[in-house]
Image (tube, rainbow, N blue to C red; front, side, top):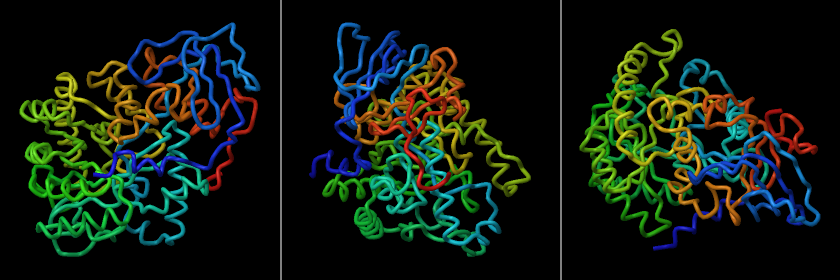
Length: 438
């Protein structure tokens, strides 16, 4: 098997000047590991990496460093949203989508990507809807955005969650990268190989139906466990891409875990059997509460979608709370695109609402998310040697976790040592200017 680190070649962004060093002093540091905060901290950045993170060193001088006094503010790792859809907006009507030029859709997606970064998300996993060109455009500095991991498409059988046809056979959307329908063993092998060829960082399967799809239900079973095992055998020959499962009803959740997925996405109907299996297999739950708990305006969505949302929001609230209480490992994911973009860190408040402590919620959005994406050697904690992805806020998130959900509460964002947002002029220098989005 190719080493796991093979996929991190996509980590770099446009290089920063490696001669530049920045010393952040007197901030409260929450490093993402779950350790107690450091009340009077110091973080030193050299180039794109952190060279020191810990207690303030009054007797130490960092040569040629720009010193930034962050007294009264909190430094956190850049957050990771492990489940979103940058190219989607469920509440945009089919007529509006049909009327838009292709260029408008691309530019609109670029603006969404930038907004996500400025909300405090420095790395994200898009689980279907955009192609690898967006990832590469971010990596080479053409546009500002979170460094991306991509699924490209979500696989399901005919009639499953990613079969975008009405019962009449009329299509409701076009395929982003390839036809996502897999019915046979050979379909699964070939489509997995195509996804790897197109640059997928993760393989997404739909082991259940869904709330938003018009011709199936969350209780329906989609991709079975044996097909997940075929996918894992195929990716094991390549970069070992993990498998993420859209799984809402309990039978789909069980198929996903038995097949060996790395993460169960949504998990609305998770029960004690699934909880025990996930704990035994160290499977991560990405509960996407920003979407799960949100019931949209019935005037903006089809009636079938509104009715399913009402029912399944209540199911998710009860069952996911039980999973969190049982200690299932959690990574932050929002399903933005099904819910509004640009408020990703509101997910932290939802996780706390359903039972996590504020510190546990922060860990879910930082070190646990980095581990799920196999980026924990580079991201997820404010630690010497890791990339300098940082979020700086005015408040203490351990006492006011919901405040960080407002993107205006995110005062500054650094990504790989680059200042990309500084609302209050704390750094005294202009942040990197966005190429698109103003």
